[in-house]
Image (cartoon, rainbow, N blue to C red; front, side, top):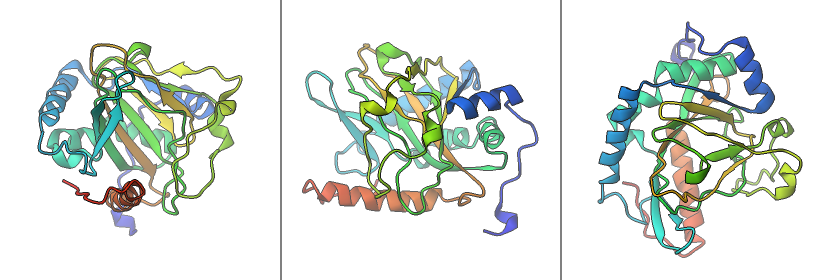
Length: 266
């Protein structure tokens, strides 16, 4: 990458030294009221609009993610990944200076958007097993940092993410074989979970090596989060487009293992 391609380093810090130390020690940080209520209201309206894109919500569309209902087993639509190419509004949010400045504060250098997804988590969606976000692909950035922006309130009843602090210091806890791995419960023995309880407009940041999971949404309401992930400038620069080419290639291989070949990306 040429020097002129590097993003400008944000001039105004979002995090104090105390908050930075808190993030690096725990592996996560919640920043309250990053976005104003009026801004979140627009995001909620946009999420409703996208949810109504019935022509996209097909089980063979690589953009879509599905989960089973925790009780009935019904297949539920859960997420668009990626999402910003469907929404100019969310594309602007994804590169909002407040998010980029916070990521840059954590990195000590400029940040690049790496991944973007809108998770709806409808009532009954079962949640995710204990895992780390890093995956052992040759080009996957170890500086992968996720910003979970709450569109709705997030709490234990609706299956908010819960993280396990300090364990990020142990690095990647699974084989670097390019596959997804759930973590065994022994990994978190003696470490208390911290639920990422958020109000609309709050943002939780956590790194690729921070173990986390989520429980089923047992509330009657949707729990929408915009998940935006970044990498540091010195860890590959701008590689979002390359990531999604690789990600879709990986998904095709995984689906083929279950006999599913009629895949599209729309």
